[in-house]
Image (cartoon, rainbow, N blue to C red; front, side, top):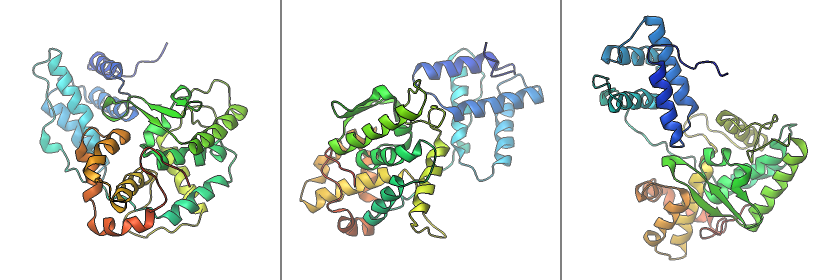
Length: 319
C-alpha cells in the first residue's frame, strides 16, 4: 500500500484535489512537490484553517528560501483555494493576484544552420554508455523537424509513434490538447533506428518511446543535461552573458524558419499561421504571432540563415 502523501488537516482535500486534476489528464510533479511542502508547513505550525495568514505565511516562507525563483508555483496553491471554495469551503482563501509575477516571455536563442548541423553531428557520435548513444539524434530531431515542445517528446509512448504510417500522436499537451502530426520518411527512419536499439538494450517492459538506462521515462532535467553535453562536445560557443541555447530553441527555430520560408517564397503568412498554430499546438494565434513580431532585426536576416533548411509544413526534414 502506498504511503500517505500528506499529513496535515488538509490531507483529504489535497488528495481529492490532485485526483481531480489527474482525472483531467493533468499530471505535474512540481504541483505535488509544492503542495507537499505546504502540507508540511501546516503540520509543523499546527495550522487548521485555509485562510489568508496560513496561505500567505507559507508563500512568504517559501519565497524567502527561493528569492530568485519563478513564481509559477503560486498558481498551485491559488488553484487549490478555488477548488476548496467550489467544494463547500466558502471561507477558503484564494491567493491574491498581487502575488502574481509579471510574465516576461524569454527571448529565444536564435540557432544558426551551422550550429544545428554541428549539434546533430555531435549527437550522432556522442560518447556515452546510456541510451542517449542512440536516442540523442532522434529526440532532438523531432523537436527540430516538428516544432515539438520538450515535454511532448519526453512523454511520447511507444504506441504514440506509428512508423509504418508515418505519424506521431501528441496526447494531452499544454491546455489538455492532443494532435496528430505527420513525420517525413527521414525522421521515421531515425526513429526506427532508435527504437530498435532501445529494444535490444533495455528491458522489454519499456513503454515510453525515449527512456533512461533503467527503461524509465526521461526526466526534464536529463534533457537539458544531454543537450548541453552534445552542444559542448560539438565545441559550439557559449556567450558569457545574455541568451543561452536550450532544447526549446529547436521549437523556436521551426516556427521562425517556416515563417521566413513563406516570406521568401511570397506565400501569405497570415493565411498559413492557423496551420502553423495547429501544428505546434498553440491555443490561439496570439502565441503564433509572437514569432512574427519578436524581433524585426532578426526577421530581416533570418531567411538567409534558414533558406533551404526546412520545407513548408508539414513536409519538414532533418539535417
